[in-house]
Length: 317
Image 1: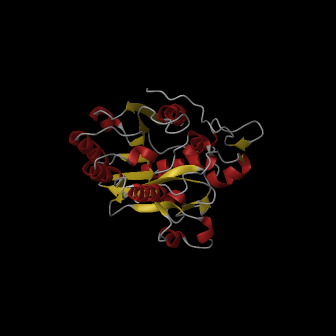
Image 2 (image 1 turned 90 degrees about the horizontal axis):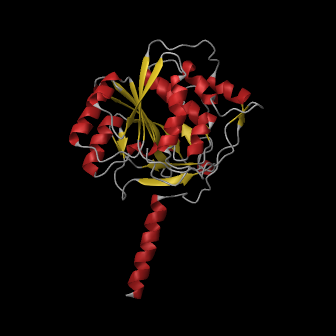
Image 3 (image 1 turned 135 degrees about the vertical axis):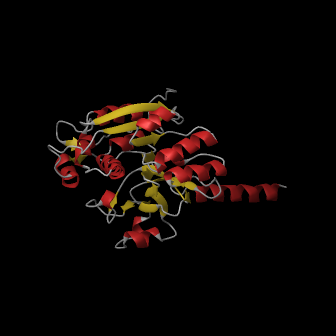
């Protein structure tokens, strides 16, 4: 019996390590960057305006993790005022799931939450929103719903979803596992081929046929000099770090990153999210570029944060 227990223990540990390669990565933000270096990537935005009025719906839920992780309310409170500062943008908030009226008003829904157990009616509302031309930016745990039948319906709405604990995986990553970007995709055109973060991602997700993976996480030492497509095909690549998806007339920009609150203060991460928002809306990204520097630029012109933010208190709403 003792021998059997040891076998089961070893197997269990093996499964945990397979599901969470790199979990021991120490959470800490990147060092702030000089604004002059960030501007080389954002380009000039002075005087840039949107081509139309944009109505954004921000979907959030109760915080469900330790402080500084899955801070859905805090990130909502950070981004909603920033988005409202952009001329011609209005932002509405929805808690747990939008009403039909909110769906009808929105051009773009940004979702950052742990989704509740959505009903078939709600999932059908979501699907109709996308198919009729509603756009979605889906962040981190927003791609997770159970059971598998629900996950398949969610994937129809956003392209990718959690396949189940045996098939999909999660794990922390640090600078030895860069985020590689498909810079041939218009959302990432002109950006570096890779950026470094200290965050968490999911991979091996349930994925619809017309999903295009445009960001993946992989070991740096194994991928020096390789193209994005070659890296994506390697066994060690954590696929679906970022993806795009079309359903009907709608566009989706999704990511499994965004676990830590400090990540949302990182200028490169904000730049990537703003690029995704603009791509979904078929707008020039320039009007969104002030958000890259909003509230995270000090008087010495350094952009980012040194605060790990792990002492935040979670809130239900």
